[in-house]
Length: 315
Length: 315
Image 1: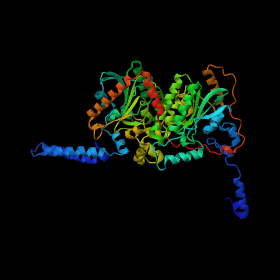
Image 2: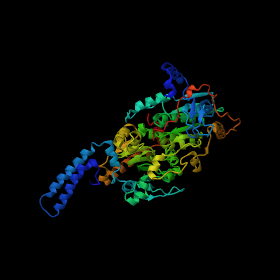
Image 3: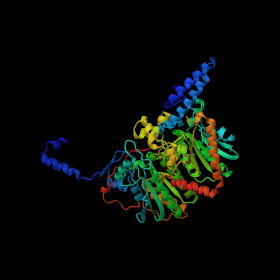
């Protein structure tokens, strides 16, 4: 409480406190990189990329797909796939309760959202990881939904695009999670043999089991600028080799330099770039350039109250 | 404390000390020490059986990592004959953490690929303690493709603390190397049998672990993250590793219930290292039986069964 509030009569003080709470939460957001204070609607219009320093902020799965796909037609698929606690896993909390909490805070059933829709008129299946759900970790539900989406793409010859953001395999589903790596890799191999294009877009961060399976198996691998991606986390590597890691280690630029990815693509260039690539892979000329966002611009600010900067909580 | 015995085996170690002492006395004394030794041996065997019939998950983790646990190079000459080791990934190096070559299993020529931790200190260092780098997985992939062309069944022996978490590993694309193996193994046109002989740790183990039949030795372990790693993340201390091992279900009995592991090969009382010949014989018998089943199947059926099995993980 400020000195000014302290000297005010109590009735007035209450009133001012009440007035303060009516200011919408999250109207302003500080860029985690350059610390510029940004007006949210501006940030939204720029695909949640800082207009000052170009830092790509983490965005949720739904928002990601909204930016990426044409506004119409668009349909969520396989939303009936839900997580299963086969091991009745319990540490300091029960996994079941952790799941319920994550479902409540994100409004999602698990960490992957799948949609079928179009990219500038090109039919497509797109999936995106929700990093706020258990660090985007892959357990049964993520692996199963990814696999079904890939199978749908294969059956119809529609290209598959995956936006990954994940801490790795989900510990609480133990070996079932590990086996999702084998499962998703197997279905992607069928896509490959069926000559159905798969583009993997890595967004900050990608580690562990997701990195060592679906994220690096793209016909074309893409990363957003400055995204971190690797097999082992930097802490584990530092502990193992007992030395400091070089600057920029495991960042997109490092991945490009070492030949792991084909290109780094700015979020606002994602739609036109993927459209060009997929048109050509489908044997067509990329005739017209799509707008950078599939969505009409956001009108209200209320729905963007969620803070997306949550640290990864899984390996 | 005798380094040949684990902490929970201490009562057995005490008995063995007594037996040894009596044997020394026996050489210069003719009272009936022979009978006494036999009684003690009997007692020791019964005690071993009793202790081993009631192991916790953490105890089994320790047996799987026992310093005297047989490794790939202990088994190869006992299970197979005419082994010719093949080296190198043809791109960068020969990774000594993965051993591979062509051998005879009975009358069948096969490709054997296994992770090797190394026995002596020097050997351990040369083999990077069984932690493969990308070139190890790429060597394995090369040998598997070779096996496919010449219709050799592939037998993999899994025993690793994990893929190597280091700068060079990341630079050369450890994630991609593992992912590629998962994808190709899912459709390799030759039977693949995978045996977990010691420690199956995460993606590093799975990188040579996708096949038609997955079998574990009774006291081997298979996990998505080491119990220490899991405990560090969830409990913030590696001292909780025993709880993590319990919660994750790292042993063959649980993994068989989950439908991930197909079979368990029983170990001699006290673990595989107490009777290497017997253990090798049991593995050999199991491999021969499974190989005949797989060889009798039409190739397309075998591949479809492998794929459907991968798709079923977690259902």
